[in-house]
Each structure stands twice: as structure tokens, then as C-alpha cells.
Amino acid sequence: MGNAGNITGWITFFIGLYAVAAGIGELRRPGFWMKMVQECRESSALQFLIGMVTLTLGATIYLVNPWDQGDLLSILITVLGAWIFIEGALILAVGDWFLKLASRLMGAASRLWAALSIAIGLAAIFAAMVRLQVG
Image (cartoon, rainbow, N blue to C red; front, side, top):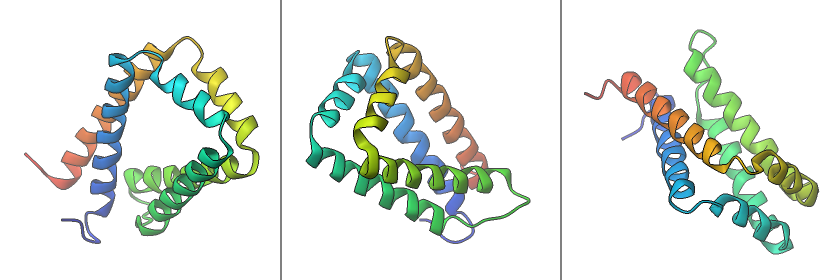
């Protein structure tokens, strides 16, 4: 269970699980991410919903994660929360442009992005386990 002393570790752990699961999903079904982005580009309602959820998730991470200038992981998670918030705001404000950029960034390298997602996720899970002293 999370508390003020280990909230950064738990946020890191769940972000890691998300990244691993998303990467595995893309490797299992190549083109899955690109299809999601395409479907979002075609639906104003979906853009609005995704923008609101992303904005809310980012704000929540930013607000609940303790800021500690001496703790690199705390800083990274707070910055990540701010970026997720900004991403949600961009999807709400200029979703068509933002999702077009996302499509270009993904391009044909979906397997590379998926592998990178899994690697980052595993690193986050490891960092969380060290932080939470799970063994």
C-alpha cells in the first residue's frame, strides 16, 4: 500500500508495468499502436476523452508525487507527470496536429518503440523495487 514515504516508488512501479504491457501488446500485434493513433485522429470524441484522461492522470501524478531536489527518481516522476499533463492539454487543444506528429514519430519502427517501451518499463520496475526494497 502506498504512503507518503513510498509514493514515488509505487508510481514508478505502475508506470513500469504499463510500459511493459504496452510494449508486449505492440510486439504481439504489430501496428496496434498505429491503429490506435489513427482511430483517435478520426474521432473528436475519442480525442476529447483521451485528452481529459491524460490531463487528469498527469495532474494527479504531478500533484501527489513528493518533490525532493535530492532524489533523482522523485524529480523524474514529477517531470513525467508534468509532461503527461501537457500531452493531455495538447490533445485537447490541437489533437489533430499532435496525433499527426505522434504518427510520424512512430512510423514504421513500431517494433523498436515496443522494445524500447519494454526496456524502459523493466528499468522502472527495477528502480521501483529498489526504492520499495522489495526482494
